[in-house]
Image 1 (cartoon, rainbow, N blue to C red):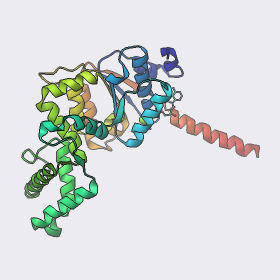
Image 2: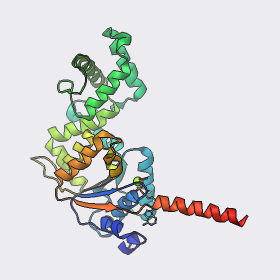
Image 3: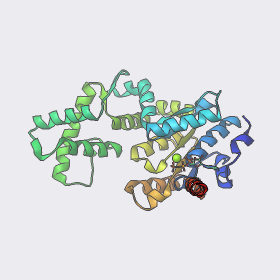
Length: 307
Ligand SMILES: Nc1ncnc2c1ncn2[C@@H]1O[C@H](COP(=O)(O)OP(=O)(O)OP(=O)(O)O)[C@@H](O)[C@H]1O
Ligand SMILES: [Mg+2]
């Protein structure tokens, strides 16, 4: 497909983002301004310009629905091409772990447990420890999840909570993690935490994936937690042994961060600008969704007038 076709109908800022030079790019905009459109057209542009082949592109998002939407949009731009790796952080991590997890002593056939299983295991641990009703298992589940998303092992755990409670959580977390390991099982948060661990501890594994994923894109970047940020950081910027290519293209809604709806997100966007001080920052300003809504309201008014 010709690149002109990929750029057709985009506004100037969108075109600037789609045709941006390599290196870090941060696209910031509000809802309905074409962020996902820019991201999918960027993928098409990179491939059609021959800058990267599809198998060297990784595009990440947060929900299965958003991942499907991204896949559909790229597919409709490129019906007959090999598809890049596109999916949620969790699904892509799970795929990589199926190849690499033995580095941590698990085996490749590991089981991914769901919320329910997690609740049952924690409840059992609480019963055995006589923690009873005073500490509902859900409380442990949430704190353990917070620790894992902050990449903290039981020993490193440091949450802004009461020290006595934290010590209790630490012990439950250690026992829970030990149990999962013995069962060759991972919870959702492990998918991210354990992959980061592997990338940090095994430079050859990191280097292998840096060579596969030479261009990384993230939609809804404002939603990244610390573990996800580290994963992107390691793949794109790298570590001392493994210098990355710095090809990271992220799009995010800064309004959500600025107004503090999600505390940690502003930090991620700032982190991005700090670690990628050479990042090209592009702001999309036109909101297409409200134009659409206004148009459809106008249409209805016209309809009513006709009647
Ligand atoms: N340049 C454009 N011309 C016409 N329509 C556009 C343009 N850019 C975006 N749109 C349309 O606006 C709508 C919103 O686009 P898109 O989903 O890419 O925005 P978004 O910023 O990702 O939204 P959200 O914040 O919900 O994730 C889509 O229907 C899209 O086709
Ligand atoms: Mg979007």
